[in-house]
Image (cartoon, rainbow, N blue to C red):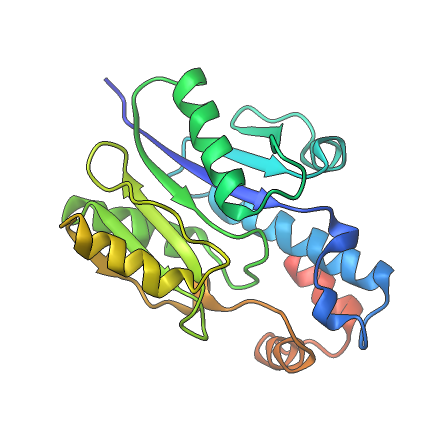
Length: 217
């Protein structure tokens, strides 16, 4: 019986994301950036050892149009509009458990990781041979950029948007789950501020915002 690793990606409307960049990028530019990052994350997941990608969207029509027809990528609407990441992830897991068989593990990732690669995704999945839970902290060690767990042994209560990294580690210890911390730029690097954007452009050696969008599209 073939095992299945499923990726769950919560995503809001592109026009309502990256609000901290409002003083630096126009609404059109922020939307374009969010869209390019989302497409980049989907590509990395599609090229990795992920059998199914489930996107939990605030605007299902917007995301479905971008994803198009796909054999392994599905888009559902969050049950509560802007109900938060915890609710979106729970919606995604419930949907998958009702629709798909033989699920071995879930990987929860943000939609805006500019450095994510299929190799990084596969490296994380490989850790499930030794652990039941893999936690990846954000660059500031407050949020969680990766949560990967075996369905039967590694699931913990979710604490997104609430100092989630430390709380997820506490839950793992509380339930005595075999876990590991995966510190990786591919998973932790995101773009929330003007400085983040400048550092990324420097790292990728892009000379303009338009060039950056092409690299991450």
